[in-house]
Amino acid sequence: MCTTTPEFDMTKLRVPSEFKALLSALQLSNPDTEPLEKLTDEEWSSLLTFCDLAQLTLPLAQLRIDGTPHWVSERLATNLADSTLRFERIKATYREAADALELAGVEHIVIKGFTQAPDYVADPRLRPQSDLDIFCPPESIDAAYGALKAICYKPSDLKTSYTHADHRAPLVQPGDWEWRGNLYDPEMPLSIELHFCLWNERISRIHVPEAKLFWNRRTVREVEGLSFSCLSPVDHLAHFTLHILRNLFLQEWIIRHVRELAFFLDAHANDELFWELWKQTHSQLLRSYAAISFYYAHAWFGCRLHPAAAHEIERLPEKQQSWLRFFSGSAMETMFGQNKDFLWLQLSMLSSWKEQLRIVSRTFVPTRTIGSINSATVYNRNKRPIQRKGNPVSHYVDYLISRSAQHIRADLVTIGRSLHWRLSEEHLAAKFLPGEI
Image 1 (spheres, rainbow, N blue to C red):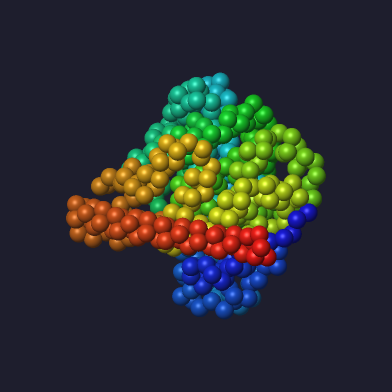
Image 2: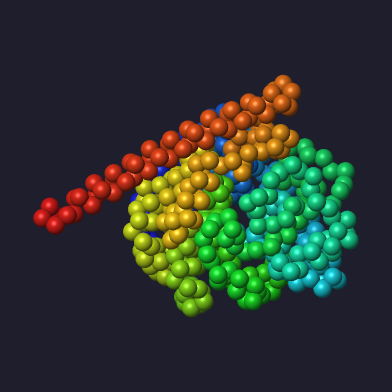
């Protein structure tokens, strides 16, 4: 069992102090809640808003923190209670959808959501879930859509682009429920996302042929009396670590997923049978992709590692190890200010210069991610809603200017940090040149 922590200095993170306090408290080895105990009401308010966006409110609610303001304790207790009730709606929604798919003769598996319990989260009630993620073989997607349409589901009318999605537009059942600001509302209906692939090579440009084999090894599990088809345990881990990579490359927030992965790795640090099967089932290439996510889990949350997982981190190409050491906190910082540091890692995983050029162009000139005038993107900045001012046209102009400035700044920051990384590499290499030791 590996317990060595990668080089990661939390004090150097360019993030608010309340987030550093949260990160200290969520450690799996030697958690420290003292910094949280010193937060002011204003800092608590900021932290709770962030935790809702990052889906870390329920993990926070499980911590034992002395001296928490009463209003904070009350708010977290309410969130836990609502989430517990909400799981009943989740089970009922899935059973209805599963019955419809079975009646139509459509085979499927459930991914993410409640399938994370109990290996990645102790209890499904402790994981927020706003939709059901269902994978069907591509040839069955239309039949699945028809089956859900038969029980009154229809495409969501949200004006959101799904260019980079692995699923069709979410399906919802019309109703009279209204949003009241409660992310854990037991009455909030779930949407259903029909996934057509388990790894989207078109978006990542990274070839993972083994992902097509996951379906053939599917299994049946039961959680809290709910029976469902899902990925086998070793494929679940592979898919989940690939999902973290996918989100990293799309500049999505990965912290909740990395925390869940850390929970799994820590709980299975002594599971010889699992890791032997994992090694036998997956290629060295797929294991190397998983190792990148393992690194994040180990560095950010101090989880224990089985020697097999630690060995795959050690086997990563030196360029990737160097990137991970230098940019280990970059994906955290992007939650508070955009950067594109992921680019250099993604390029290291591509062998074709044409594919590399495609990714560079898409990253530095992201024209395909410009929202339309009525899209939700226009009224959010880094997941945070902004106040609508003036008429839609003037607001859209402001959005385009702001977005352009944001990307230009992120481009410059990314290039500057890359140069710093390269110079640091050369400096370290020069230290160990023959004759200079």
